[in-house]
Each structure stands twice: as structure tokens, then as C-alpha cells.
Figure 1 (spheres, rainbow, N blue to C red):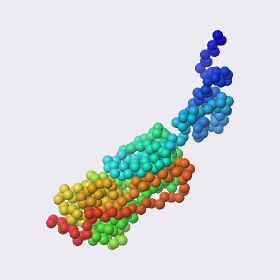
Figure 2 (cartoon, rainbow, N blue to C red):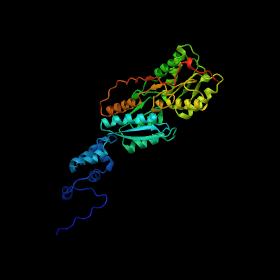
Figure 3 (tube, rainbow, N blue to C red):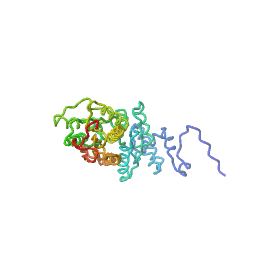
Figure 4 (tube, one colour):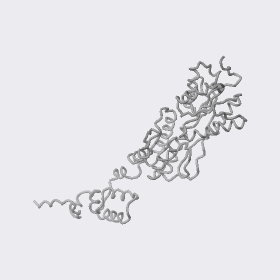
Length: 366
């Protein structure tokens, strides 16, 4: 029997010879011969950035010398292309908006062979930047979709920019020129909705604002204000209340408006959830609906057609907006994106029984 080879001492450089020629060369062999870490070898093999040119040449020289051939499956797992995008969204109590966003983004991913990973966030959150960094790193996402209001959180967008991760924002308040921004014509839609009420004879029209951190809130209020100004109607401060896009704030604001000495004959709510709160408050007070008060909302979520009376509202194409955001993001990741800005989506006013002409309003106290 031949003599057994002496065990190699820790730190000893790998020498070419029969042993390396009979077994498959591994990434550990390359790292040891080049005097670098395994991670550095992985970065060089996968052509990643942040490697000094001198180090890169040294590692590639060893790769050629040892005839190292990376495992294809391992490269797929460790390479930069994960074919996965993330969806970072506010973990809100009301799920209608988020559900449509999820379905739209998922449809775009499935159509293009991508996976979608979710990262719900609670707002406000002082650690939100680090939370997003951790998610992006661990999930190895190539890009991220940011529904409202996350796209307006500077800690989130700043973290993604630092990590050079492309993102698409849905309905941002302040669109970033270098990123993908998807929105709809919120201002025009609320203008049309308010004008419809004015055309029905209403002159005292209350308004419940959406969450101040959502970019769409200011645009929708602007549409309400423009409609009043166009028809020479004063904007009474007492008729404007601050809501938060949820049922409870809609109910609270409705109570404040209906307690006024001269309550409005119509109320425009910034979304359907708040409008549902308005209808609930009115019914608790025993007001005949739709005869006593006209109520309108925004979004045309599933609840809008299931309330009584069914809600006049604005149909916002949330699912299509999310699908477009994810599709354009994937196109950019694949080098297929254009620099042309995406035109805002049109909205549609949906007329139902919750808004009636002023002539049909029953005077208060009757």
C-alpha cells in the first residue's frame, strides 16, 4: 500500500496535484488559493459590484487555473436575479384597497414568471427604514411596489435608493422623476362628483378629508374645492372635517357635521369606508335615507354596492394601477422600460341611490 498523504495544516495553500484533479474543485478551494473569502469569490463569479479590480483579476486567475465550474443551481440561488419583487404596504384595518393592490401586482408577476413577496408595515414606525432594508436583503427582491401611503415615506424610498433597488409608487403625493409613478385623476374625479351634487340642487355640501399622509387626500379635496369655486359657493370651514380613510373616522366626522346648527344636505367622503361610517351615523340618528341626506364616496370598493342605500362613488381602477406598476417595474428590471411617464388613469363616477336631488330632501326635524 502506498503511503497516505500527510494531513494539510490549517492555512496551508492548496497545491495543484493528483488530489485536486481527481475531485471536483469547490468554491472553498478557490477562496483558499486566492486568499479571499467565499463571499468575494461568489461576487466575482456572479459579476457583482463592490469588488476591487485587482482582487477580481486574482480570483478569476485562480478560477481558470483550477478550472472551477460553479454549480448552476447554486449560482441561481446566489446570483443577483431572483425573479422576485416585493410589495411593501401599510397593514391597515380596512383591506379593500390593499386587496385590489395585491391582486393587481400578483397578476403582473404571474404573467411574467416572477414571484411576489409581501412586507406589511405598521405606520407610523420609527424603524421603518431598517425594516424595509431587512426585508429587501433577506427576500433578495429585485424591485419593490409601494402602494399609498408607503411611497411617500422618505425613510422607505431613501433606503431603497441607497440599496439601488428600483421601485414603483402607486398614487404618491410627490412623484419621484427617476422612479415609476402610477396614479389616477383623483382631483378631476372628486370635482365631477361634487358637481353632480351641485347639479342635484345641493348648496351646503360637507367634506370629510382622507388621511393626511396619503397623496390622494389633498388631490381629492382640491377637486371638491374647485367645484364649489366654479359654481360660486363659499367653502365653509365648519363643513370640512379631517378623516383617516377608515369607518370610525367617517362616523365621527359625520356626527360633527350633523350636529351643526345648519347641517349639510350632502356629504362627500374621501373614500367608501368613511362614507359607510357617515351612513351608519345617519341611521343611528334615525334619519330617513336617502331622503334626509345625500352621501357619496370614492373607490367603488365591494362595500359600496352592498350598503343601503347603495353608494354613489368614484370607481378607481386600483387593480389595473397595481398591475401596471408591477408590470412596468418588471420591464425596467429586464431592461425593457421606456422613459415615457405613465399617464394617470381615468376614474368613473358611479351613480347609485345614496345621492338624491335637493327637492327630495326631507327638512330636518320632520
